[in-house]
Image (cartoon, rainbow, N blue to C red; front, side, top):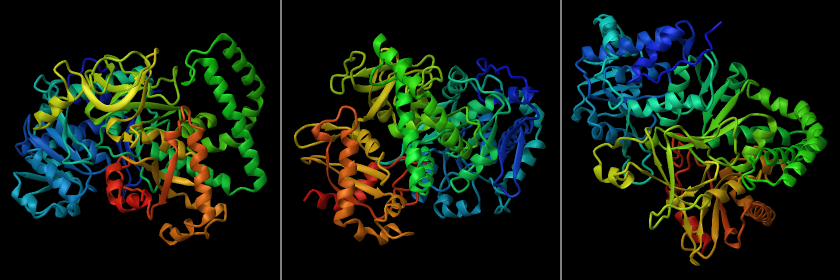
Length: 633
């Protein structure tokens, strides 16, 4: 049996000390497991601590010292974690990015970060950076692969061997000393660069330790519990969650988009973090299975979901967790209790016949999942609550390490973004005057706390614009705070669409509403300076096929002409009108007028999504500007 007492890392002054403590507490628990590597990789906590120490010692043997910058251009794998923490363990900092990023972006990061060494995925990625790499001040290159390196370079095993033969024990004892403090720079994480050059966000050991130490106030995980990892491990969201779960002795299992459905069933994770797009894809997969059933079974499923929708809404009211009515009266609570009692049997029968099978499709062991990195649509929240999979929504930015707010299991207010982590302050201010706004009023969100970045690397102007002299970070997001301290993000200030009549429209909420339609896969609302809103739509082909509106097994590019038929156009007009009007707070300005279908989905491959699956709104609108212009002509 494992010791189930949570490890306390509050006395740590750097991340290296965490791996020392976990190795002592859980030496034989598997820390990192990659079932998709050939051969598969399993690393225990003791082995992880040893590898981190050896990698760091190997770097130090090459002359890399405290304060140096090392670029880490690689993707999810146990070796990434070893390299990441090995670099930090000697007081160096890493500048991180995926090997799949665009070549020009990688070269910019290498040059801008002043990196003197490069840890790179493999020879193919190294070749991608040539010949410009030769003109940069990179003194050492290390491959994370086992490929034979070019002369003067090293591969992973060679660095580990150098570290093991260079007084590793002495380094292991010394690496936790005071020269690496909470103020020591740990990493540069470059923003996605959706507009202009990416900025290097400077995060310190203290920024990241705040996440490790205070995530335990949200949920208390146990050693040996399983985490399924799919987001880019270099990104602050996945990264901080990994540091937290590994600091408590969990087993991290690496997955990927091709294997995620199989891995969920096979490895039965207890926890997982992802962006809304992943939870939407799982939801859509379930919906497709429902559409493949007979008409009678589809009607039965719809009946159960309708009953359960009423059940969870009544339950939220009774618990005071209905965002539209946070302070229900006694009479409203009593009526909600009556509704729950009357619907309980149907909800439980639906669970036995339908929802249990959905949970089994995700492994059936989730204690909770976390959604962040963007707004999750309300119907997705409802779906997971109905089927009994607990989503804890959260909020944060790369600049805040990233988590500032997260919903708690004891106060899981759906459609909200949670309560602040300890030592985190929130202000809502007027966009123009920057005056503080009353509780419940919407404005610009400011954050202050130990997780706020040191600043943007070599960019004091951008830093001063983002962090005021009192330490308040301007998030660029709009939102409000409830009287209970819940943060509710309503959109991005820079994404706000201003119609020609002066009305301000936040597109994200409308997009979330429209995506409730089974015929909408992806959608972007447009209309800046126009009389009305418009939309760019990626249609859901499987739903159209099930409705016999397009031929089976069609490609999107092949059916664009058929999508312009009167029958399909009328269908989408009705779908958009219904979902927008059903949205709380609907006004006539929310109505979507013209719309157009796009020839391909938004994806990472076509640069319309970031590697954390956020739609690059400006890239999409710029790419399809001709279509937008025609819509409004």
